[in-house]
Length: 286
Image (tube, rainbow, N blue to C red; front, side, top):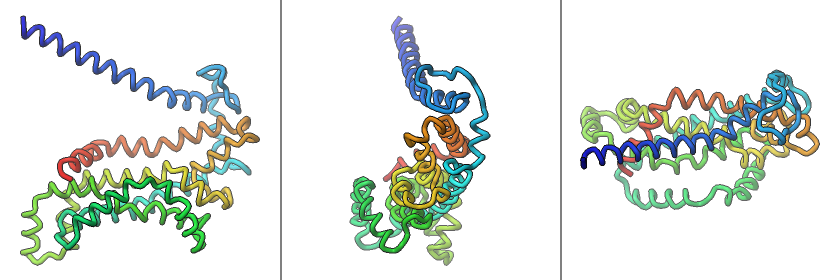
């Protein structure tokens, strides 16, 4: 009787747990479903009277890739992809190198520098926006993609903590054996550590790619005064929500939102296994 009661209670707990997850997932999916449905609406402006459009059409997806004075989505998409790729490479290199130095290096003031990095991470990035903007303006880097890449990549090394936690799980005996064989630190890093760290590398790559791909605040601040063809997707789509344009471009704006989500969704689905392994592996030690 006791075992049967425990078994029934466990089944009830599992059912309630799954039900809660299903409800939360449904609530989370509502805005996404609405965005996809609105992008397939035959109307140009915003429709708030019904959840689903009264008439369906995919014509706005075709219009999205036909540029005009307002809509230059193809150029925005390429700009964002270029910035995201450069930022991803630079940021990933910074994070991996800082994580390796703090995990395997034994140098003076190591712990103090690590603590300072953690404290700096606690400062919200938006508080430094004014200083960042005027610094870039002094060097003539506003309204340029290079300046934006610098902003995204400059502090990437401060996000080393999860990567360091993963490196802490790598057996030190391997590094010591490589040093005995005469390997330099660079060779140990590239030929011993990195081949064993594929999950955390994938996690770092995806995280570094997501920052510029999804960012609006810094893009709006740095590229706001430039020509519209140099905008990122976030800034360009935001311009479509202007009062004078929203009635003509709102559905195209929704189409852009759907298109932008596709590449990163595919990337995450392909790399999901390594992404999860990187997070859990980096959480073992810190």
